[in-house]
Image (tube, rainbow, N blue to C red; front, side, top):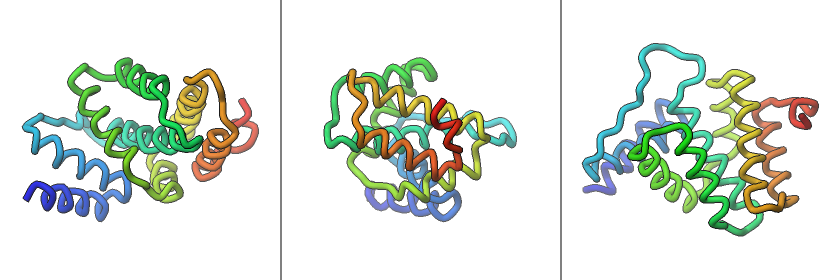
Length: 166
């Protein structure tokens, strides 16, 4: 029944919010299964929703991490450190568990980026690109495949070349 609940919540999330909604729905079902409380913290309409932003970051971080074919501890540490700077310890734990699930799956990059573009303002999208470059450099070497993936993400997010180069 637990798998059915995850699929149901993930499916409902997909229908209402697209690929990111599927991830959020799956995460909520997983967290409720572990009897962990989860709160989105939204208090009204916002142009860039914090929940969407973090899930988007996790999906794109996973894509960049997998680009060179190696998942390194230094990269996982970067992700964890980033989350620790943004969230409380129990939330970091939940997001790291979600991130590990995301690493095991493939998500349609173009669809996720389209959804991000519709729900995030330009400065937030630029910040996302900077975070991805930080991950790429976390192991002390910026791989050409990682740059290629980040460039593709930037294109899908409608980030122009001059902003990308900055």
